[in-house]
Image (cartoon, rainbow, N blue to C red):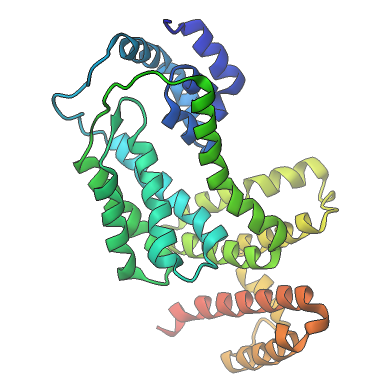
Length: 339
């Protein structure tokens, strides 16, 4: 049955950020990508307004074909390559937040997550790439940067280059029922969001640590590009600022929301308020020396170490993580001056 352009635009307007129009056109990989990124942060969804006629024409041509599209290699697309890089980094950040407690995370979990993100973008539309080679390069790159969050960047770069090198057209397969397609998409969506939701709801303190470390490392990548770093910070803090605007600074009644509020405020300190918030956590003055900061840090660590506060483990762990983050923040700020 031919796909209609009007219906595609209706679905794009009603459920575009979650990929309803792509599901209608049989572009399941694109639909899943939009489900996991909310339409590419909304920007990809808006940009697609001009691309929908070509998507409909491509879907109708695919319905009339019953053999492989083979023959030749798809043209190199800088936009697809950039999207592979971005989504690979995004998948890596999510995995770092929700799965970094795994013993073999940097060997198995991280390269697998980044590689799957790259492959998801590679499979958008009528193209795909080689599964084994792309994941293989991701796994080979991971040990070089073992134990460091910055590993996400080179893994995504290497996997994206490999995916572009092995790009090819998809083979036309028999049509599947909608229930089978929805079942596959549902499993993929749960595999992505399940660990993250579990960490946020049942392991909040540890998740806060992972998020703060991940976002801090990510923002530090742009330390040589202050304007771009501030732009990325604004993107990360946009949900919190919108909430503050709507609620007038109130409304975080849930304990979980209070924890996330503290995290957002701490991440915001990576720019102008970094010194002030870190010193407030440690309880030191603005003119404190390195020795005074270190001494105060050791004192607070002894007081709030979880092993010494088994009667209030969650509170102690929260304070312990805040103290560590503040101390590391002050150390990072003093390193450039010392050098």
